Length: 242
Ligand code: SAH
Image (tube, rainbow, N blue to C red; front, side, top):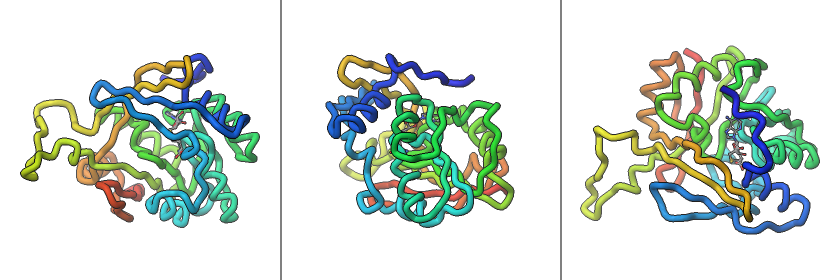
C-alpha cells in the first residue's frame, strides 16, 4: 500500500525541512517513541554537507556510481553532495514538502514511495542512508523490501544501506544483554514526530544488526557485504543480487 500522499498536516519533518529551507532556521523537530524518552532531530543536520556527514555516509557516496537512487532523501543532502561529485542522482521521498524543497535546491526529486509497485525504474546504485533500514519498518516486511530492491537495482548494480545494532541499548553493566528472545526483534522501534503543532502518525522504524540482515538477505536472494563500520554499532552494507 502506498503511503502517498503524505498530507502536509501530517508531515512534521517536511514542515521542518520547508521552514529551515525558507527561513534559514527552524524550531525543534521532536521525536517520541514508546520505547524511549523524548528526543529531537536537529533540523540543520538534515542539511549537512559532505564534510559534516558521518564516515559511513561519505563511504557510501564515494562508492555510488552510475545512475543513483537516493531513497527517503529528506532535504536532499546526499543527492546534492553526489551532484557536487559529478554523479547523477534521483531522489524520492513520500513527503511532498521535502520534494518541493529538494527541487528548489536543484535536486531531481519526486514524490514516490519506495514500496509503491508502480515505481519501476532501475538504478546502478540504490542509496538508503541515515539508518536506511528504517523504511523496512518491521522484520516481517523485509521480504517486501528485497522484492522492491530486485525491481530497482539494475543487474550488476547494488544497494548501499546503513543501519545500527541496537543491542547496546539493552546491555547490562556486566556486559550481558537483557534481550527477550521470545519478544519482538529488538531493533523494531515506533516513532512519532512533531514540529510546532504538526504531529505525524506513529510509524515503525527498523534498526537491524548485520547478522540478522545477512540471514534475510540470503533468504531473499541477495549477497550482503559489510563495507565499513562506524564508531557506535553502526555499519554500511552493500547488497547485490545473488
Ligand atoms: N536520507 C535523508 C533523510 C532521512 S529521514 C538524510 O539522511 O538526511 C527519512 C526520510 O525517509 C524522510 O524524509 C521520510 O519522509 C522518508 N521516507 C519514509 N518512508 C519512505 C518510503 N517508504 N519511501 C520513500 N521515502 C520514505
